[in-house]
Figure 1 (cartoon, helix red, strand yellow):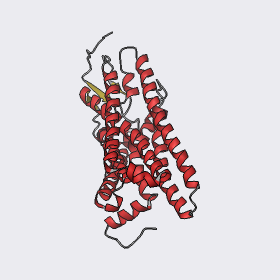
Figure 2 (figure 1 turned 180 degrees about the vertical axis):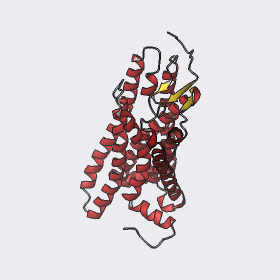
Figure 3 (figure 1 turned 60 degrees about the vertical axis):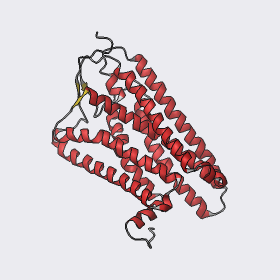
Figure 4 (figure 1 turned 135 degrees about the vertical axis):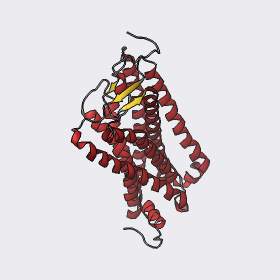
Length: 311
């Protein structure tokens, strides 16, 4: 068996989603529509926050980061998938596979940290309103956001280097629609027990810690909201927090299903992966705009209807 950093594999073949050949064009069109809506929807959110001075607050700056992450995650995965549907172009170079895996985990881990940061922001805004403006200043927001990106980069660099230090000497067919850790480990011609264990512990610890912090924040938030005497105040607070909790659940449940089951090769894995790589980036802007009155009003103003409030 070949050892060390030497490899005879110069490229990989992405098998993609299993489907009858006659469904290639319909699937291409469906995913193309989703891709266009994802990029445009998240782009509109970023534009709205940037041009509307009323949204120049920490919550919406973090939402800009989330929208940008959703756009880039989609751009890292979907174009290659589309090429596979229509052109049957399933080959990806070894270096391209490394870049795709690094990019996906860099962006995904950053998003995980960002969800935690957004929960902390809501905790401060609702539980410590008198101190919020002095704690969550513009510079603090920028440093916290930068920290999420740096944390994601470090985590992804560790995971990527830990996998591609292993020998790949054939086969080179990736039974997945993009280069991801579980699929790549199945192609390694060496014992991957340590890698599977490290991936389970690393991603599991990261996900559970962030999710635990989010739940803790919202435990305090719910207790504070229940003490608000105004029915409108409680409704507005719950509406804002419900949007964030919804996207958190949509993000964490599929990730837990994929990464916390070492060695899984179930066909359902691909379907779940499509959900959190393709569907979730589309759902986030929809959820935030439908459940956030300020965002809906800002979108209305961006469209030129300044005096009309959406119901």
